[in-house]
Length: 417
Ligand SMILES: NC(=O)c1ccc[n+]([C@@H]2O[C@H](COP(=O)([O-])OP(=O)(O)OC[C@H]3O[C@@H](n4cnc5c(N)ncnc54)[C@H](O)[C@@H]3O)[C@@H](O)[C@H]2O)c1
Ligand SMILES: [Zn+2]
Image (tube, rainbow, N blue to C red; front, side, top):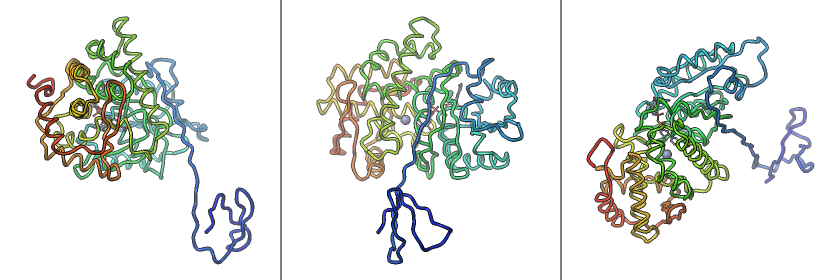
């Protein structure tokens, strides 16, 4: 068996010598197996870029753009969340017009219940109709986490890979869904069951979009930030503990000097922490991922609760359960456990849900174990700001933890407290 490093057949003939990277190896009729090894370098940029659609800003039209087309016509296919269209559509249309870019806007009602393959297929059909030139016209996605995930999938499928640019407009989008490589849609009642790894060439983070996001969805994003804080960044936790309500109140718009400073620090900590974890393990070959914290039971809980619990809310309920588990194992002190619950409540997040029944949790764990190659690899907080992985959690232990959680926890902000 040969290992083919670089394969170039001369003159299209099946005989003769083939040039390999390190030297020549001879063609042989005896060889009946080839192993091809190659590497695909990945480089993408995540950049703060407030007031993206302001006069004079060219960042979005320049992002990921290939060489100028021979026709001189500049075009973009823009997938736009329907709610973002209502709130910011005029500014977006004006922007492309001002820059002489022919923009085809594809407006999508993006939410967890429409995060499916049909929505992706509809967008693909429109892209095909547009006749997108994949080398010059990156798809632009403007919206929340759902839109980022769906358009990412579309980009990875269309012509086996079409570049795209992300403009996340929710907090989850800014700190999580917009910065990684994963794409996906829900399928067959399962969360993100179909998906690919296809990072955007460029993600432009414009936090002014958050001014129109409602409080509940700001809290939803704060849950993913709390995740990073709990497993790797005690300083970030302190910021949330000290200023969580202010962040919720000011929606990261820096209304006050303190608010501006904290919002900036929190976003930088959260994004840096996330990328620090993602970069060395972008394709998830390593299955012990600390950013999976809060994502062991939550995919099943979220899909069962749909649409009652938002993604971050389901993640928070999972984090509350695993904080109790960690406390019961002596990994987290009582004081720290109570601090965690207190932060969750102050930023309006649920820390318990009536769906947390032992059978559903067992099913959720079973599904996650299948996803994690037969082992639990359950991330648990160690104190505040560190993580450990366990593989021996039992159904009894979960049941006892849930019982305790139900006395400490609260349901969604609008429900009983
Ligand atoms: N790929 C990843 O790594 C990753 C990471 C985290 C989350 N996710 C996914 O992200 C999704 C959750 O994202 P989300 O919370 O952004 O949900 P979402 O995309 O459904 O957006 C929430 C709501 O806010 C609206 N909206 C968006 N921008 C707005 C704005 N600027 N002003 C007012 N309203 C606005 C949307 O229309 C929607 O109704 C989940 O499906 C989750 O699986 C993916
Ligand atoms: Zn998540």
